[in-house]
Image 1 (cartoon, helix red, strand yellow):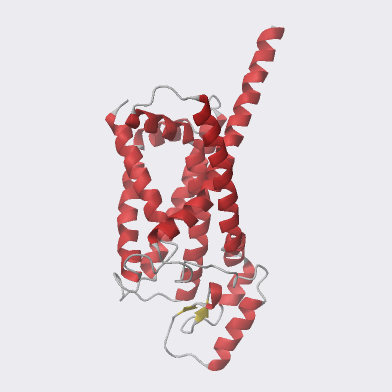
Image 2 (cartoon, rainbow, N blue to C red):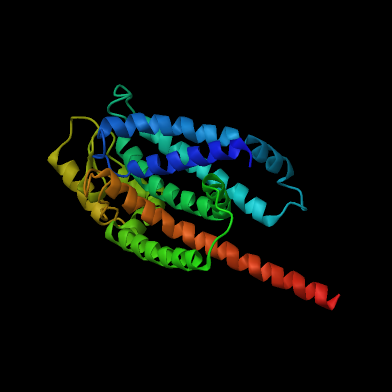
Length: 294
């Protein structure tokens, strides 16, 4: 196997671990780590794109070619959406920075604060789907690293049992941390109702998820604060849903954070992998029937 694949594997693994740390601002160095590591992650992410640039160029050139396989089109669309979301998370993180770029002043900072969080959860889902589509590649590289040539039957059964446990654990953590509410928050943030909710917050304070206050101007009145709380409580998606961990709630233990958010990501990895496997089998059966009737 080419050495470039080992580099890609190592980079992707580091990116996955680093990304889940961002969902708890108390982990490791707190806010300082969150922002500095975010910039490091940005460099790693665009390095990841550079290492796969040949694939990006080749598919882009053929994107309107009718002969291009639909799985490649789907993968391309997923990667494009992931690029958009990741870029938004990085830019919005810079705009609301308190440590690395404390002098950046933007209007409606509360909006950027809330969308930064919401889109981060959507990005976690997209990463899970991305990994699920390439899981067989991950397994192959892993086998090469450890020089595993054969897989015993008991190992396969143990892996399936472990998969079920991880799936159950991931679903439990998603429920505990209000994951679905955070995803639905993406639509409410970009919807017309969110625009109304954000009116009047330029220069004021905005109460984001879990009651956390995203600071704007120091000049704010009690009435405007109460009004913003009422508006958010009446939001169609109730954007005050629990978001333990991201704003400092929950455990700040590094291993605990990795376990929690990797578990959530794994739900989408597992679902995507088995759906891909299922459709692959149906496609093979369809080809077999065509050959039999030919």
